[in-house]
Image 1 (spheres, rainbow over the protein chains, first blue to last red):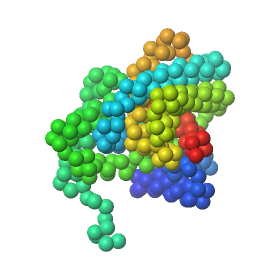
Image 2: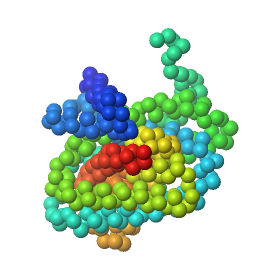
Image 3: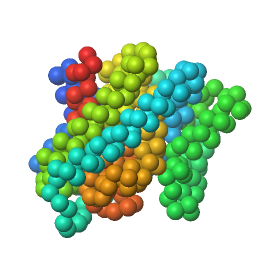
Image 4: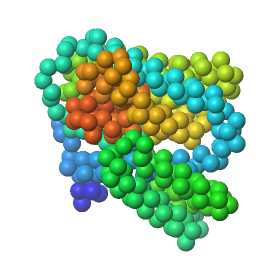
Length: 127
Length: 234
């Protein structure tokens, strides 16, 4: 039952996301709206229900699995990809290395010095 | 609903590909654990490569694979929403450093997307490709939706995010080392913003603190960028 409840929470968030998208006609994907709605709902509720944690952490931990068919789907784009492979690699290289450095550096400059490590519940796996 | 209107069942062929995907994921995860969790051994990348090589080598059409593969893609929408759980869990982590967190996140994210789009412009990429690259600093399930909203190519968007994540995880330790970024919170934040889920998973393996910053940065950045991009591109 817990798992059903967890799945229902996620589906309900998605449904709410779709409704908001429909009402506002925003060009924002419904799943993104659903995340905002879920976080707000959890804030009101005060904690994460056990079933939702069970399902949510499972889905996040194995997200890589659900992406395999997506990456395989890039086969359909292989001709175009081969054509732009060089420039695309260059773009990915620069736009990964530079922000990695800048993001870390700015935070380190602005944040109060790091003193005691506090623990947060980690979350997981892949994009 | 009439029976004929049910979605296509995986059938014998689809079920075979579905099972093969599951088996590869399991086997490659095991292998990665044996290889001390090295960043080179991502089950996602190698699983997809092995299947792609099989499909091309055996001359099997992609749609045959998708009979099974699509079933996994349906679950992605639910996984995306699940990101809300760690965001909620980690809400206390940023309170202490909310301003630097948001400032660094927004700048890093704008830089990742901006530099990619600008270079794409210089290299004469068409509008669809530029829109696709703009989503590269959003975690991929969200990038998928955003890319279709702003006229990019959703599948390519996810692919680019995944490749970026893998590449970023491989180079990040060297970058942090060279530029003296030693604050674990800063490392986590950078990993979450730039390398998304793959970097976050990597960060979790290093420490819970780096991991929680990365997870939070990935989620918040994904949401914020998704909310902004449509207005920039439409």
